Amino acid sequence: MKKAIFNWSGGKDSAFALGEVLAKKEYDISFLMTSIGQENRRVSMHGVHEELMLEQAKAIGLPITFLELPEQPDMETYEKHLTALMQKAKSDGIEESIFGDIFLEDLRAYREKQLEQIGFNAVFPLWKRKTSLLIQEFIEKGYKTIITAVDASKLSKDFVGEIITKELIKKLPKNVDPCGENGEFHSFVFDAPYFTSPLEIKTEEPILKKYHNDNPEISSEFWFCPILKNK
Image 1 (cartoon, rainbow, N blue to C red):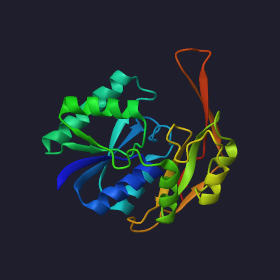
Image 2: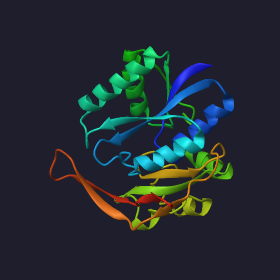
Image 3: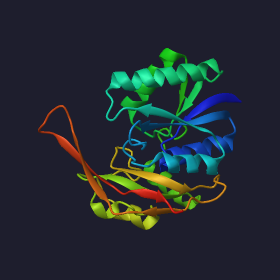
Image 4: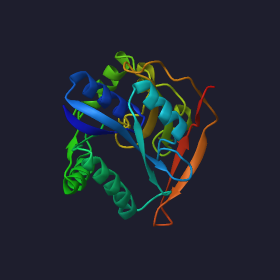
């Protein structure tokens, strides 16, 4: 089998993609790779703390490597950190990098271009799958996930902290992708068919965070639901 890195966000798409990869046994996953903030130790946009990512990796039975980044890094900084990590992986005989992306063409093109420069192949197990069917299959196969963040311009605070079910999917506005592929929402998987056991988690009150762009007149708001280990 080809040695590979799996790009792990902790959310439903990466979890389902990993399940597909493990079932087909085409790749030997050397480790999961997750980007986190150097200071807050949380996954970007998902808002999940490093502690829970380690719990996920333990339940899966794979090691996890964190790509540590400064808060809101520019592309040059991100690419510098990523290239250093990937070059180390390549020296260990790894040449495949797997993603859970579904249909964002520009993102795929960017990933392929960057990885090609380092001598890696990009793999997309879920590519072009219909998201309305994908989320149904995800639920039917026993994956359990909770919404950790929503784009406040697309979804209300009420969706944050909710477990994704078929009933919840029916409540999504028509302009929201069922898998949140356009960034409408993000999630954290606390159980999957390949987990040794479910993660025990609890939630706290949602928090509204504002992100400002280079244009001071443009800002984005996201509702985050703090997810904690239920000790």
